Image (tube, rainbow, N blue to C red; front, top):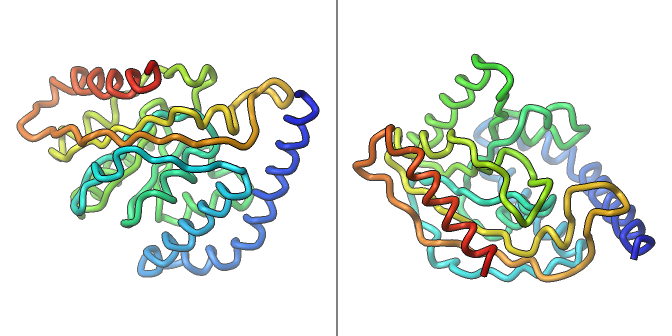
Length: 242
């Protein structure tokens, strides 16, 4: 089992790195100007789909009809695996903006997806940087675009158990009076789990994704953000238990 995990991880690391090298020139051009971002998004969708294929992940989606047809909303999934982002890009057809942690700007090649201005990096260690990121996220919603935020802030070290949720997504949703779309990744952690090289789970399998009905925030006040957070957390948690 340990040998299989090692071979699989080395194989997928090579695939991922090679795909970044191949797509980098294209993405560098498409991410050079905002007017090219929609085209860059389409290329990213294809890239994400192929990365799922090479991972041997068979995507199974429940509740796809719950995705809003238009307008601003916050995509709010639990974060269990390195392939979660690929699943979201594969399933959602319309352009959306992703948020990511500040550390991504140090990642070779991959950083361009966040440092180009298309997506948003969040610096939780810097109050001013965090405030500026929050302003940008608010502006994205004001423009009528969906925004994807992992409320745990990072891949859970104890997946499928949830890490504590951060409040930003829920405060933002109430501030902008936009719906939150909860998503449960049920089995992704079995395909490519975060953890040590030899012990973390990995291997081909079914990537099950449950898209729950949107939670409306119309009429809610900022003081209700904690209650909203608990509602979303319970919604996702119940799917993981079942």
